[in-house]
Length: 261
Image 1 (cartoon, rainbow, N blue to C red):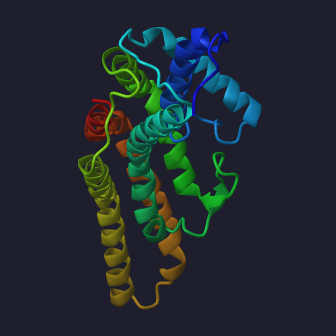
Image 2: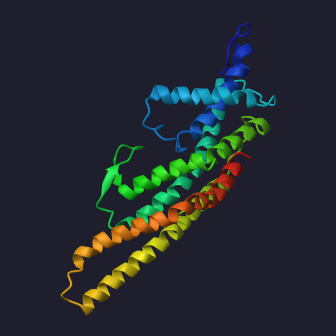
Image 3: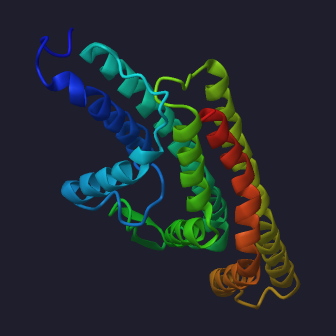
């Protein structure tokens, strides 16, 4: 489908319009999955305005090598490719924040917090209290550790070095995301194992005490002791969470760089 008729003013602004739309597709699609607090529940107008502002700020980084497609169909295909790349990079960043959510979900039942729920600020749905705390902590560390700067820097370098149309997707990229998900699950289990070990020892101790002294009513103490022990262990691990977050961010950043190569 031709873009415009000969002699119309459309060809003059077509490269600028096509370039801006491609930049907006690449940068805006990643914002769908990047953990920006309150972004998903914000009004559509606010989200569109924020995405447009990021696209306007990133448009000057577009290199001179960008060649706009000659037809509207080519532009739509290019926008689809840019959105797929952005969604893949956003998924890699979102998987990073799932480390703490998966760890808290693993120990919520053992700690006795599976019966306590709170409102998830991202989805406005009931969720486990430890899950909500983990998501809020991960969102805070995403900004406090400067992870967001590294993600935006990777996108800025991709716009400068690889203009729209130069990015390619292959089956290897999907395998990288799958391996990243496996690494996230492994890291989440390793993060939850120390607390789960302490809770298991607490169960064994109370069971032995109940066996030695059958008259002791230890059943009423199990939940308070385990809940308090889990809170103490999480408080002891809190100073190390930023360092653990940075170590878990390394494979996620590598996956983002591979997608934006």
